[in-house]
Length: 97
Image (cartoon, rainbow, N blue to C red):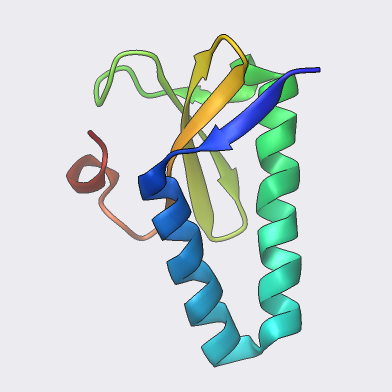
């Protein structure tokens, strides 16, 4: 079975998402949202080509949306490495690399 990993930057993104969600909507909503992100991450590991190619930002980069966030990832030997999880309103070019 293929798997996914979050890079250190992506882990930091998740921590910020959790903090913001807990503050505004509570711990239960934060847990549900992170669970959903992890489900999408596994879907990407199983089907890595479903994402939108973002080669102009970084070679091999793909992206896939989840609610108000976008997962940026690359395919690798184990499945996918998720390099960032950014809010859809963010300028991704400033945060990728």
